[in-house]
Amino acid sequence: MLPVHADVELHSQCDRKLLTKLKVYGMKIATFNINGIKARIDALPRWLDVANPDVVLLQEIKSIDENFPTEIFEDRGYNVETHGQKSFNGVAILSKLPLEDVTRGLPGDIADEQARFIEATVIGDVEAVRVCGLYLPNGNPVPGPKYDYKLAWMERLHARAKSLLASEIPFLMTGDYNIIPQAEDAKQPESWREDALFRLESRTAFRRLLNLGLTEAFRARTSGPGHYSFWDYQAGSWNRDIGIRIDHFLLSPACADMLLECNIDKSVRGEEKPSDHVPVWIEIAA
Image (cartoon, rainbow, N blue to C red; front, side):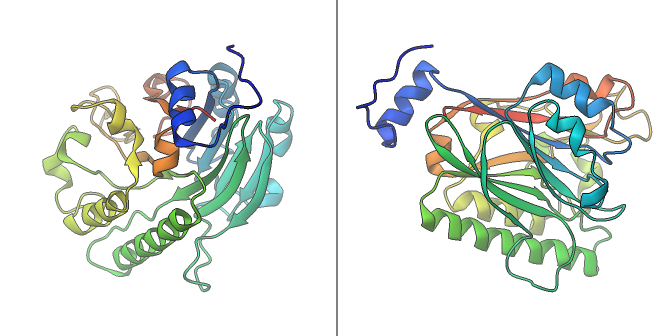
């Protein structure tokens, strides 16, 4: 590791870019919709032991907080924060780095009881980063109240992003967005035309987030079709590689300056008792 002198002003944009170029520090952050912690009780620790991320944002833990198997992850050096719900939804943060100011629930609707959002500040070696883990509503069937809820939830997410941008702290929003941003993000886009994941209103709401100045990390590093993060359990989708890309990292400008890598751990889908999603991860100079 290259030395960093104490008198270097690490918080400036210039120095963040220099650290990124030199890869002096790297914080590995992953998102993973595990589709049930009970079902993935062996698969998730197995992936953690191989991938060794510093921070993981989990979705669909499908467990109340008291029943989450915290000890399995604490034994691996992770701090554990959950926002659970019985048999449905649920998000969590696993972090080997210190966590501060953990909050649960997406602001903007005090009547919303669905466990879909968790935030915390991760204290890195160089920078503190606000991480937002989300499980965005599916929205089907369309039209209907579930789709209305999805679009309203995205409006609240947009408002939260604006608020975080105003605070000027580096931040990211990651998780299962249940959004196919472009046709190239689906093997068979024509079959998704009227689905809530690909309808124009959904993609427009996603684009509004990007238009705030956020960077979609994967597309900042990789272009072209054939990159997916979800394969349905039905109709041989995995074996035929009929997938979609719906798990995303959106980075604030300050966080985007730190971006080193972004990749999808596709091979996890072919392992024993997999989730229908696979991990997506970034490395940032923090």
